[in-house]
Image 1 (cartoon, rainbow, N blue to C red):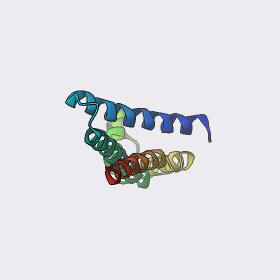
Image 2 (cartoon, rainbow, N blue to C red):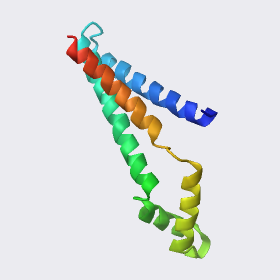
Image 3 (cartoon, helix red, strand yellow):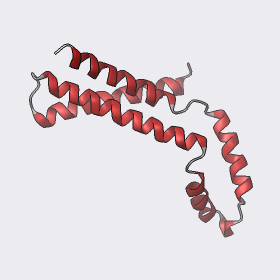
Length: 120
C-alpha cells in the first residue's frame, strides 16, 4: 500500500470514530450501548454512501456536470467534450479503486454495529 491509500483509510477511520464519539457526546449517555450501536451504524452508512457516490463518479456518472464547470473555467470555453472525456479517463486510470477505502471501512463500522446489536 502506498502512503496515499493509507491516508485515505486513516481519514475514514478518523471520520467514523469522530461520528461515533460525536453521537454519544450529543446524547450525553456514555454508558448505554445502544448509542454506540447507533453511532457505528451512522458512521458506516454514511461512509458506504460516500463510497457509492465515489464509485458513480469513478464510472463517469457526474462527468456532464464537471464538464460544464470545466468549460466555464477555460478561457472562451474552448474545451471539447471528447478532449475532456479523454482527460478524465486518463486521470481515472491513475487512481484505480479510489472508492474502495470508503466501502471497506464503512462495512467494518456496520459489522461492529451488527456485532454489538447481536450481543445485547
